[in-house]
Length: 387
Ligand SMILES: *Cc1c(COP(=O)(O)O)cnc(C)c1O
Image (cartoon, rainbow, N blue to C red; front, side, top):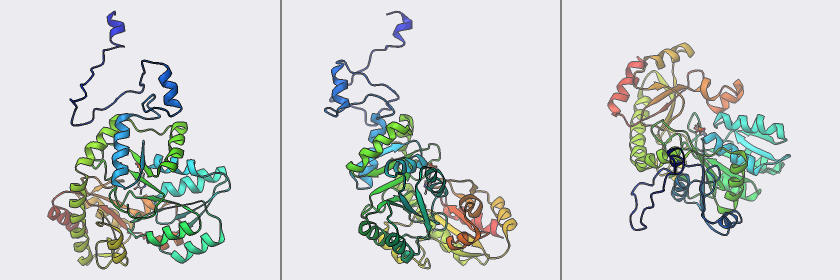
């Protein structure tokens, strides 16, 4: 082999089967080859296991998907390039022209946009309700054949709790596929419920360091076949290096989550006593209207807090954010560092005034993601910003 050929066909290093790396290597390859061409046919018709092309499957990505499915207590997982890609893959796979979707005011804004604008072009109809209005949810399902319901808990941005046992019971009764965007709760919560499909933005708590985008779909084997086919045809696959970063993030996931929850509870309890603050919403506070439900549904209460300024308006709120030194103004959540963001601009801009009121988003509503920093420093930062 001439050097020009050699660099393109390096010899593989085969590890002995009793000698293995403790951390899965990054299979940074698009193509997988076979020595016997007939084996490709066997792979395609599902007679043997193996890998062929990176958009279809990759061992690094597969290890992450399998681990996440185990953590969420389900048969199968599929990883994609972002949380939004997880949502679109599920919706594209399950919905067709004429299908009806129920979704919520208290949810991730792009979800409402994907269903209400993008899928509307293909003849999918939808209704937007409040997740607190369980009577309206039941009425809607009674009145209208519904294919799918997509919801969250705790909700964005004001941390309401969806009554998951009630919602899943209704979905079963009316033959509706339930999709729970479990990003805010994390990968270890809500496994015990009768949910058909979980979607996650791994960008948040699983990555944990704000340096990689990814999403996951977790479900049973039968539904996963449909998602897998859509992934191959639409192409929102995850890069193997991203999968490696998520596997690394997972090693400290529980430690980070525990610390973030402990910090969030302290910060929320402190905010609640502050004279310039009102409407503090944290599911772990006994004052949260659904504290008992959160306690029954979740192992812990998460890292997200919502609150309003008691006096002043939009300008005062922007000034308060600008005075924060540790809490950084940024979108996203769940990473090691604390963040603060104005809720109306970032999360409720597509809603009208009446809808925003129902959703609990006011002019000065702020959303905070609590990190793993020293809690005293976090409280001092908010204290000087609120003066
Ligand atoms: C961030 C987020 C998403 C989207 O995730 P990306 O990884 O940014 O695409 C979906 N749902 C919720 C609840 C989120 O917070």
